[in-house]
Length: 515
Image (cartoon, rainbow, N blue to C red; front, side, top):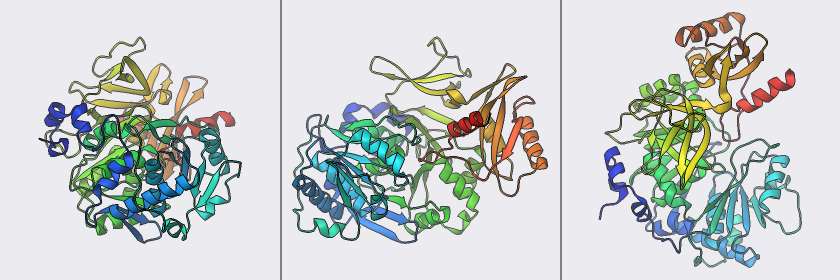
């Protein structure tokens, strides 16, 4: 019988993809299911490599499926011996590494709930999340252990050089008893330390639906060597960068430490990776590094998510690697819903678009009254779930060919003197200037026009009044005479969310405080 991974064409995806076919990719069923078995245990034959971790310091860590399966089982026994029961939370605050994967998969094998936490959290960010999820155990490194506030019931495990020895004498097999609907993971979305985003609760069976994004958002197929440099503390790095490709038995690449574009390029080249999915920021950093031509790569598929990719960087990727970058759009709450089907020979990628819906998912652009917008008309994008439309809080439009286009977050729209302008479009035009590295645009109050666009620009060199005027002229000429940043300031850097996206909310807060 044919398997979904046998098909690469867009038309085949629409014809063959259904719920039964997705479940057929796994050993488990609607009753009994365990993510660790699906991602690790069933791929242990031979000495197959599961993960290659490119550490920022320069060395690579190669982890086989067999080693991870063995020691995840040991960690499950370790948890049981220390009183961690099914349903208890086990927080893991580590960079990609042997200890990270063993802890995450061991917790899930035990039936506990794994909670990955970003390693750059300080005391406030960590305290909020610990108070929210109430873990029974926290696994972290020695440097971060010092910011953990001890309290009754929380066991602290330091994953140092003795971590593997701690597990060495434990049994190498553990029988999981988890059901498909048991909770397996809490996933926090990126946000500030002052405002804790609600944790999304994922069941063991959540990975079945996740395969829609794997097959059609990142184009994963048997034989791919796949790299995702996003942190596994966030949805993209964990679900799309780690769990989905491992469930397909692929060799994956992960990045640990402070991101460096040249270090990533070296890892891609040395280990012959063929498929990469990254944040738009990663690709901009690769372009700005100016060294991509030094590294011969075997890339065949390239995708991005998190925020729109500016057209200058998209053109660079096409010219440098001969691949059109493919968008993957979704949120932690609703999952991935719009993709550009990387690797599908019958799917023309429209640069700048979000692509089309994944098979079986219904997406609409609706006006304020909830009615579908005509092609070319901007409204709010909504996704059909069970018995109703779920808002994405993103604006967009549909074109005549059925492609969706991003219009920015609902609060990124600028209404100036009656004109409606898109911060995303203005940013994209600013990025066309050769002296611009990054740009962010927000609306600021204006006594005459109500609002005007204000741009925050990171330039290659020192900013000047002449450069600001040059950028403004460029935007006016590309968009419209009224649609440009009337205010423009040069900054050393832009605030980012922990996931690496430009944080316009922080810029708006700073402006409000300054006013």
